[in-house]
Length: 152
Picture 1 (cartoon, rainbow, N blue to C red):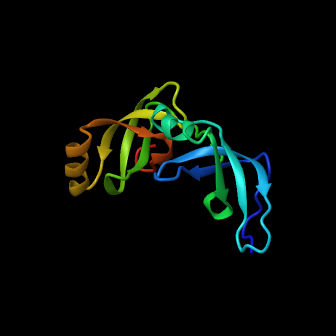
Picture 2 (cartoon, helix red, strand yellow; picture 1 turned 135 degrees about the vertical axis):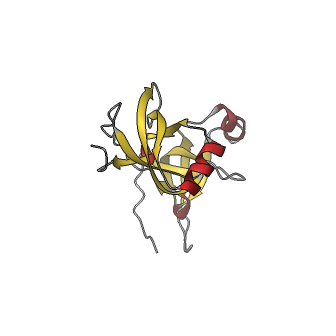
Picture 3 (tube, rainbow, N blue to C red; picture 1 turned 90 degrees about the horizontal axis):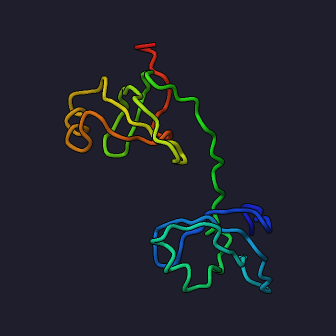
């Protein structure tokens, strides 16, 4: 039956039909169908990007979502990232962890983004990072894992 409890009025993440993009939605009501192994919910879009707007508008901002399509939104917790400190970092474009110095914070982004400078990494990582980003690049707060023990 049900693996998770969906609450009316709560926010969930939902994938727009025909795309791989997820958007935040609010559950409006539970649709009662007799003798079906799944449960459907009427959901309303809470926030979307201008790119997603045309697809969402065509459905009048409302979708019918199956219970398994609704994902719990992770709560955002701001880290205490300090400018000038060295952090262990990880990005999808480069396998493994490396060390960066945080140079500045980019305002008005959630999660916060930082301009960083590459400090220490493996030679193969250096080649990949310099090719993709250069010596200074922008990373999300989620990519800064912890303070480096080597420099602090």
